[in-house]
Image 1 (tube, rainbow, N blue to C red):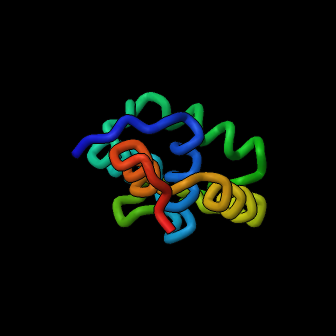
Image 2 (tube, rainbow, N blue to C red):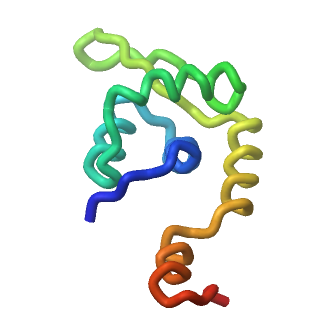
Length: 106
């Protein structure tokens, strides 16, 4: 099932992915395009905004074929922001349940 995410949820998804492991932009974009129907062109502006906020940082890794790949990692401010986002939003399952059945999950 493809899902159109609200703008704030994109921040949460990217931070959650980076919380699990450092990643490069193409890998992040591919995951979000496949699983959430997210427009790939929005990734770099989002990453720049997150870097300016101090939520993430970047570093270069040289590959076996001597190319450099830019990786992103979550920083302490990003972990704090992710924690706030997780507390402030119901899960997607909770939201769907509220809409479909008109009741809040316990």
